Image (cartoon, rainbow, N blue to C red):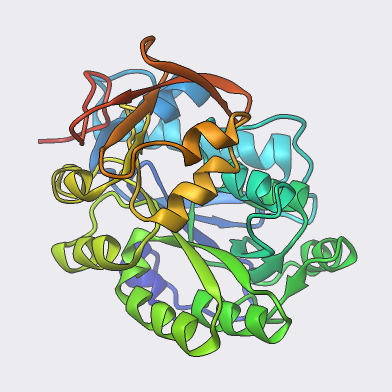
Amino acid sequence: MPDLGKITGLKMSFDPRSDIHVFKYFSSFVSVSGGKVINITDPTLKFCPLASHLYKDLKNKSGDRETIKAAIKTAIESKIKNYGFFTADRKFSFEQVAIPYGASEMIGFALRQKTIDAAVMVCEGAGTVIVDDPDLAQGIGARMNSLLLTSPIPKVMKTLKTSGCRVLFENALIDQGRGIKEAIKAGYKRIAVTVCGHSAGGLGGWRLIEKENGVRIIILVVCTTGIDAGRIKAVGDYADLVWSCASQDLRRQIGPLAKCQLSRQIPVFVLTKAGMNFLAAYADEKKTIQALDKKKQHLISNMPGGQSVHLGGFRAFISQAKLPVGSRKEPCLFV
């Protein structure tokens, strides 16, 4: 288990009986226990366009670290209050798409379109789960951030199991590799899996599992701010889609390899043919995405021009472009 004292600054170590949840948000490690934020480490990120859209206290580009930490605390407290995150009151029903190019939203559409059979995801209070219900997949992932460590919440586990979700470990362990193996044992052949960038070093092993079992694994790498060169290379070698977050190194190295980029502010890079097929399930105009020239790179964003499509119900435009394409509203780090 991770040393909580090392990664969060807390003077404690992990006890499976503890109520402790550790995740990364706005480049800080955040710890929640008893439904309260108990620790936030210093952020390296100064501004994020998505966070500024969702939470008014994170709109200020000129705030210092202490101001941002206070805003992070407010944002997480709103998730706990409004959606029951990290508590037994966790809500899994969201009436609309939360994030236009969110990973869980895209997984939900892919499940509805039968592009994939199931997804291996992580949920606070339950750890690694296998889900094949599209609404539940979005409910698990919507507004959740890069969960690194969690402990069991019995009511959350019961709710998920009652909804048909497979909860793999009673101690709420996070282990997507084992999750993939269990999904294969359950008979699923096309499996999406989400993983944070800091865990991307093991992607090559997942491709080996894929090859040995004759299945298709769609790897979605999220929360990549601050990942090192080795993990960026693993993303380029093995991922199907990757969210670039505030990593300029990832943009520069992975962008030129991409078949398609979604959004200019926080680019999502689609790297493979399977990734493009996964993306097509998110579009009302599925055949338009499938018909794109595979020898050329494409940008899909809200910038008018090119062919109009609807992704997750949001209108966007497709144009040919040399990737990556940037924006003045990209995330920025403290210098």
